[in-house]
Image (cartoon, rainbow, N blue to C red; front, side):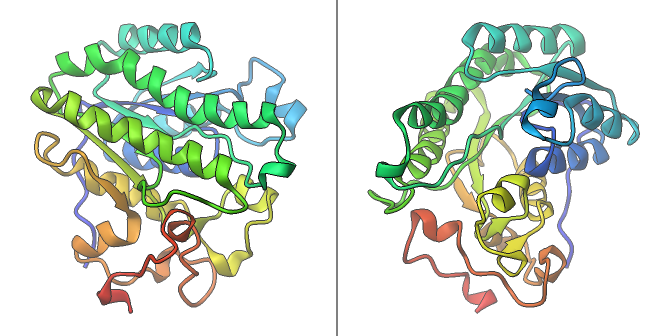
Length: 291
């Protein structure tokens, strides 16, 4: 069975962190469904950030690839740590498209490490990018999402809050769960506005530059970003007035949609270990359909 994907023609999505990995995959898949894209991130052809960090991909490149799918895309250089920059980016996006009805908080800093090994300034970075960035970007969009004619969404790439500790990675785990905490809290605050506020999180580690850089397993442990963007598409096919306040795992959500063969997402044969889910839920077990 294949996933039922939404018709997003007439929609516009503002996605943070689209230069590579999960964010770029989401942007391209939404564009494939007719959604205009605001491509944002720090790596731009107008600065030296990517060159200095040895990073491939730019917000402009992602925008061009989206436009090749027949939609309009607008790149905006964005540092989610800076409130004034975020607010200006939101206004620019709305001025350019007239309306933005989908916000996807994807940009994240990652550094799994023991407390003893993680300097305080790196803790601040994780908190500022992940938690604060989600907060100020979501907050800036609320008035616009309320007025949108199309279905409105705030979706965040973050795990459920199901643990009170993470040995060997407390700062990163805390910052990611903070992103979900804000998003799910907004579901209650915006319940009367028909804005669907949900978080999504992969069960396995995903093949991204960060995963490889930090040595988080091997290709046997990873899936492609496609499984995450398929989950986002599935969520966007729901009614935001009814599907809100959920923290979903990609596998669990897709199983509910009738998908039980995940081999197309695997880099190698066999299902990868549920590494990401067990980061926040050490007792996580896959749905019965997959066991």
